[in-house]
Length: 129
Image (cartoon, rainbow, N blue to C red; front, side, top):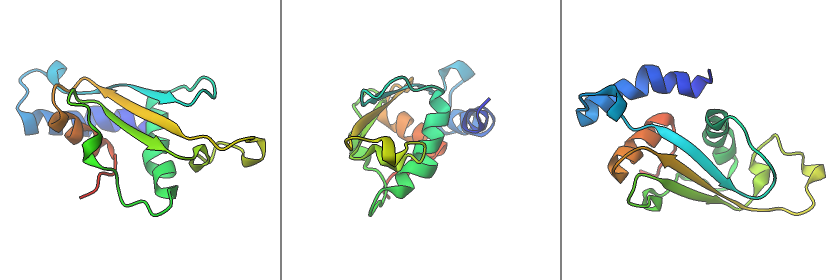
């Protein structure tokens, strides 16, 4: 199991259950999938990608000061755009013919943006304060 999924189950789920007063653990919002729109091929292991995004890629973005909380869609999903795929160290610069941006959509089971903001924030998504 990935490090972040393990943390979600042991720390984040109980915190969300306490914060929003869920009576059933199945009602706690979770990250359902991440959609990366770039057209570079197949990506695997959602939690591994999310972990690399928040801990490696985003801190490498020039002048990064956190993500806007305005990019929620009203249904508990969050989308962000990256101008350059080279913020991921796994991508070999010498094999990149053209620098491409990408859209990353985090789909959650949250019913509201507040629930999703809390979930993604506890998972480590660096929102602006």
